Image (cartoon, helix red, strand yellow):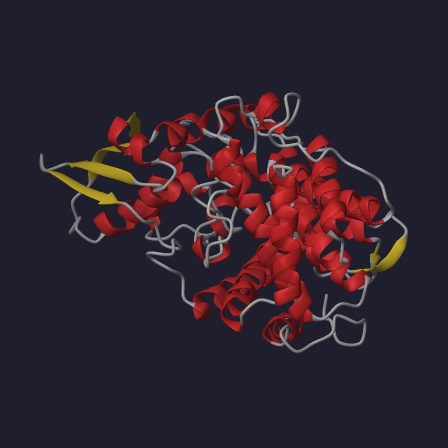
Length: 444
């Protein structure tokens, strides 16, 4: 009996679930994630990199797939690229803890673009989103911690999820689905150097992965083959990108009852998720100050949070999003951390001196948890402490649907949309389980 590769097993899982259909419960969850993704995509329109992406996209040939907030459609690949990039700019898109992936920014643009192009139903679209999340998160959770130091998991692993979602909608059989995943793996890319220089390339990662997933699936539909052992092969993805990973974990418990999507976290703050537990702690401790001043803050975090977000002197708004010190200081001084805190030209000096310390006990639980412990030394000589295991937006500490809708309204306004158009977007998402994504019924 021939042993199936990991890609073939994923392909069989996709094909069998497509045939059986998905439950209303999981599709309702997916609808919330589409709502959250759309909020980030619309917010991205109000930024400098977002405007550059839109200007680029407007030079592409017209098509039937829409870009968030635009009135003229583009090709599926062009729309997926733009929507993927836009939704990753304001740093409020969803994030999965185990894989450290922002699945919505890659999977949803790919699924939406193909669903619109091929006039598929909203239910088909949501089902493809669930499948794409599953594949991207399973691969991301298996690559190991060393991969994340150099590579941006959202891009390198997300491209597989985009291919899975597009392949679901294309109706690919098991062989073609495996080919699509194989080709997607050869287009996996995305390194972290942009973060050291404050460059905009991070947004390119999600756009590229979303568009590449569509390309891989569309080519597979035409008989274009891809390597079926792309994940575990001697010269495959894990060997090249994640030598300390565990490719066998990709398909572990694949036939279980649960899905990865409901375990993904949503973001209430417009900064790197690694800062959120510290921000929650700062907001909680602020209520205990009672007029006392903070002399110094010390935040204890896991290693990856320190690697990416230990920056005492951020200069640009983007650097501030990846600065624990800045985010803590703003939360303490303002009692909130919103888009306005990252929309200023001059970040200026940080009000509250703060140090970042790596705590091995916190590193041990990462990425199952994204915790932080904040200590504040006050001017009266006392020290107050708050530890947060599950920042707001985790499944254990969820954002309400009303909070997600409010988030969409806030980000849509930031992106320049009218209240009327914003309400139309909300109505569109609420009706996804019924609508066919034709030009007459869709609002994108």
